[in-house]
Length: 127
Image (cartoon, rainbow, N blue to C red; front, side):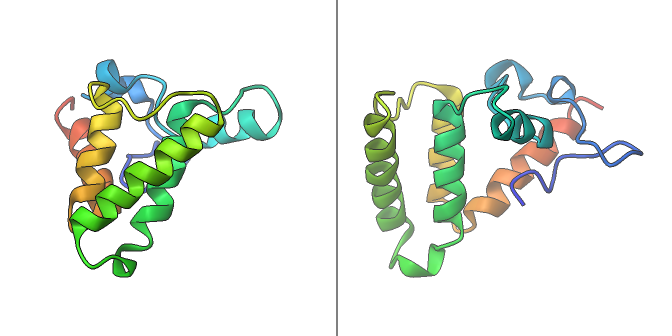
């Protein structure tokens, strides 16, 4: 679901991140089937951006549990910081473009839709 708006090639593989207008800012932060496979087979370790993205996905599915976007935003920050600090990765860093992007998305009315739309548009801009 998190990669649903990323274009695919004729074999059903996600278009490489380098084709996205966001590649320079978000290089290495996008989920892909290959990245998930590498984690599951032990070829890659889970990093802070994986944890942030997965927690974002969880929160994007629970929008009805919060009375407002601001409440969801605050809960997301607290939850994500707890996860990151338990892994000795430090709290969210809003100056990081990807982390700022995820925070912007979680604050929107449709977090996952906003996330997907921005990724989709970043490929159209490069075409």
